[in-house]
Image (cartoon, rainbow, N blue to C red):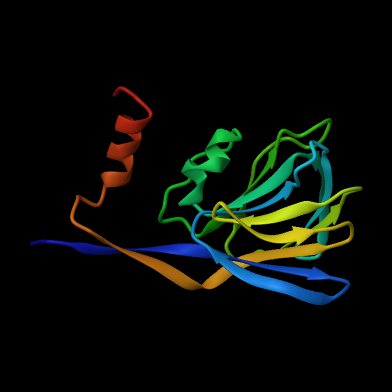
Length: 171
């Protein structure tokens, strides 16, 4: 039969504590710096390419690929990105008196998050808890050198057709 190969970007997250690596992880959908078991907000200082952006006071911060923009990021109020874009999406989770808008950044961006908490936080990669974070830990997110490839048999406009069906949009 007829098929085509779709290629999608992935994220790479690196966590460190006092300049010592905690781990490096790759994600197809999203990377989340989120609160731990206790219901306490985090203070997450965000920088883009070493330029301070804002301090999120929130339950967490999501960095999503276009693939992940239709998952947790969408639930948090983020936009839907076309899967062929090479971009990253930042969106806070339940922000408290803070910058509460989603931000779309080009793929070459380097995001740095400094975590401030009285308890602990966690680094969640594609829904899996990967690292326990404490006050002062740093998470850096970039585009991964890896790509995810999907063999598709449906038409190339399948993404928009599935949006109409899944989100019950009517044309």
